Length: 166
Length: 357
Image (cartoon, rainbow over the protein chains, first blue to last red):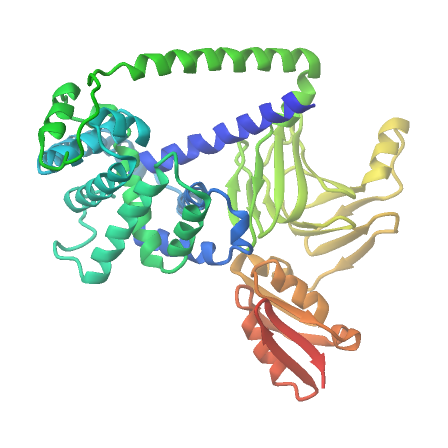
């Protein structure tokens, strides 16, 4: 039945997206080194048989990365069962650390935005905070979609340079 | 927070970062074209550093989707400043810079959500609960060369080999797993009240708390017990016995080291293995061949790598080989075969072609 099928696909996509969003938003656990993770992902990408069959390479990349992170997390949990004392420290430190993290991140983001040119800042803000499409941004700022791409590239590079993450 | 780099990156890193920023910008454009996506993938596959930089940037911007992390800003002022700046060298369109798009979009989203909810209810009425549960059962898929370790909701762990597909569906009195294709090791969490059943095309494998390897393709299922005991029913027989409530003829109790090979419409073959290392070697990406026909060895390699070894000569295909190989490195097998003077090994775009001299 077609509606059942599409329903299942929607559910499947939601299931994946939830995992991806988690992967993209949260800090990686300390025991996962982002560079090691990237290497493992890279090796898996090289093994892809027919690259022309992958229509959404970006989504595919995140899926593989999220799988690897999940596997490593699981392996770490199973390889070394935590003692009660260890667990207590883990639980105790979890919340304050993440709060501190947020505060640090906020401060870094704030200063990164301040050091951008007004146009780049506006494009980054409309894209990432307001989740606007490139055409919408172009309309609001009176520039071409090509300019939006260029400003966004500059903005992303600037953020990467000014914010420590993971 | 631990810095992942020093403050003056080398030129290669700077370039990789710049490219990552470019590609993320291109991909976030709704007008991004198919060739652009392919170019992006080619760029990604060109270097591990590209993957690293792109993932870092993605995670950075991903985190920025949390609105509470942003400083409060007056959007109208941001836009006005941008338009007044030197970069706005294109004449602005004569349009009021008011922010009205958001609320409209939310309304659209809600009405879509309502529509989806209606569809769910309708489907529920038509299809019935069991069918829906089957549709909703999570499906786990691995691509060529990809292996995954999955923890199921009951705590059982599944190692899923390359090019495999598995569905898990938990009921009150049964943990129903379907291995649709490929190979997996199941480490089953103990639960005497909820048997763990793995169904393949040809068999039902039932365990309570144990570990076993299952390899399934269209015509054949091979079950190997690594720990504890499992019961295997040949599938059509299983259905008959359920109807007649008689003990199925083709029911097998397997213990550690037992292997059962079940092919469609054929009597099952039971083997006792000296050790199960060969069966589980795939988890370490090793392939162990003992008097294995070359054709079977080549097929094993094809599960892990896009570069294949093709055999033109039927007599060569039957040739037996022995050795331990890295599953991700078919070149090692090609090299091994090149050492044989009676064989000719030619490289081509898809891998290697083997024939007799």
